[in-house]
Amino acid sequence: SASVCTLRQAIRCKTENLRSERLFRVTYFTIMFVWDVFDQAASWWFWSYTVGLGASWGVQAAALSSAVLGVSVLLVALMVGLCLKTRYLVDAKLPEFAYSVGAAVADIIMLVAVYAFEMEGLDEGSFVKTLNLIATIVDFASKILQASWSICSPESDPKDALLDSEDELTPARSWQHSPLPQNGNDRAVVAPSWKLWQS
Image 1 (cartoon, rainbow, N blue to C red):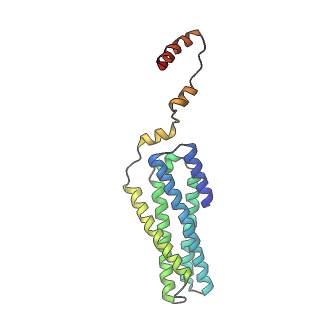
Image 2: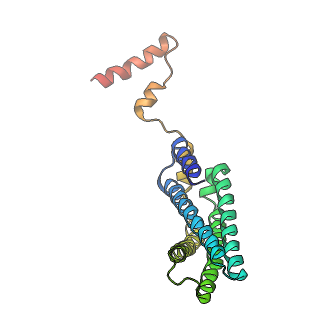
Image 3: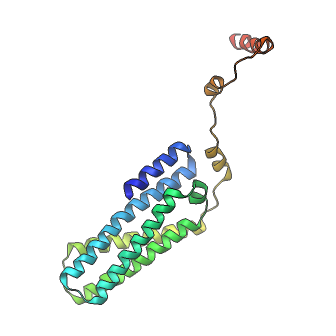
């Protein structure tokens, strides 16, 4: 899913000629999505670890709930990223805010599961537990910042959307795409400008 999302956004930036803030936001969303894929992999790894060690059903249920919620948020985000048009994906605040809140809730549940697992004292020096805890804390902090930014950030400049939607021609391309003269009168009009350019 991470590779599919990255490829789709790269094609979006290329075909729509995104620039400035819109290019930054699409790139940022893609990086966050790829990070969340690895974070959810750590969550599922931790859940399988709690099952293998025979943790209490409460710890296993909390870890599984967090992992399932995180994957659900990722799948919805993947569908939105693949299907939604750029003006709805980037300019609207709701998709980013909903994604951040959903991922943050999954992180909170996972933090509770890790704390309960620690209280049971099954494995104090577990690499899986430590890795999952670090990833969850970093992801939770980033989602809080992302949700705050989605609310407090200013609206996108409509000029950026206009520039991204139009294929502006450079002077060279403009000359290449100019219509050829159809009759003698047209050639008579072009000739003076050519002479001025030579002078």
